[in-house]
Image (cartoon, rainbow, N blue to C red; front, side):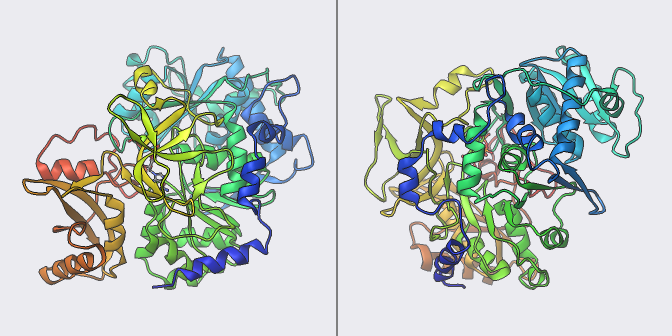
Length: 593
Ligand code: ATP
Ligand code: MG
């Protein structure tokens, strides 16, 4: 195992290269969201619009001929779109919407792979003042219909292949849905009854468009949560979110103009829109978009061939790369890679350090949620990483640990090391403004001026935050609170283990005991001796109370389609209980968060 010092050295090395966030304390003190807003342009006629900040202000200025979006097709072939080119295409799409009578506040859904039309739709919709609502393309027909019904979809952009079929039979159950625009991925015209051909409409539209003033508080985005803990919720975000997208991309991802940035997340999830579309363009970077799903060598080739500087990915993907071994990444020249970050699930220390072995630098974990709209807590480039910690709250973000009282109040836990719910002081611009159609649930997220995240964490004496687990997943055993993440991370230290999911199993004596589900590397065979070895390893590292009492070997773990381990499902299966909402359960390997 690599020493933790390797990470400390990295911070010093990166500082010498010049980073956005150098003096954390001074920046936090001088930071204000008003000042961050002034770094943006604002609309010429007043107001704020995400697409203007992402596209038009660069297209109207010196970056006009810089590549904004480099799209990699199935064969890995690159197709470049400059800021100017993207401006014209998104203007056209906004005019298409106008022509269809789609206006401010109307919902435009997309169900497609990561194809250029998805990005044109996203930004053109925002220009038009309509609401962009991405769906994850691997959803089945029912989750798609349910989300479109909640979101009152007026327009759907999809492809004429597989995806259209998922919705075709359900149109009469979606009375608000007026228009379906079909994309033919081969660039041909599609003629399907009661639909429009995307390309024909786009080709015929004017490439000039003036954005009508959008208020910073106008609704811009509708994102559904991952459904890890239950039925997904529709989180509403406004145009002001772009202030946080830009500032967090600078601070947490160290993103700089001219960077080549690859966010592996699909826009069907909030990461893939906030950081896979908006933030990098706002900064003036070049965005890499890969049409295809994870394939280990393809990914390494993308890093090398497109000279990616900043890379934002997820723990599941990192663990999959780890599974393929260390020799593979070493064959590729990724010397231009400056910063690597991860989000979506806790990042096991083993995975942070694997980054050093594979790419000569650690992965930087950061924490946020669909509800927060942007990164809140991060290991920023210049800080010394403590592997396993989520890092520190970004400038403009006040995070704390709270305990609930019986009277419905919250008490702030100031002492380092105290465990409780992670809370954020309200007021950052990308905070969600509603759970669509679920006002009571929304109100419950707030006490006084704190937003309660539903995650448990603690803060150490240096101000670093450590994830314990989702409130629903935490195990209570013999008077102790045990976070599954800690146990899973220790199991992953063992060379045979690739992934682990840990739950609490009811026990008459201890209330709950820890049970682990373990996936082995292909090179190892599940047997009694290995089980005993793993139990002993965990007991040695964690002590008898926290270590698992039972280990079960599995070929894989149930995950959401965004790649998060569904512990509630492991538990339901273990206890023979109903599985609850499983519409988000993946049915194939999907590391795109
Ligand atoms: P649902 O709310 O529908 O159950 P979800 O919470 O998984 O789904 P997201 O908003 O996509 O939906 O995920 C946010 C959650 O993911 C966080 O609340 C946290 O539990 C987890 N998470 C994200 N990043 C990290 C991280 N760096 N470390 C630990 N947990 C993380
Ligand atoms: Mg959640």
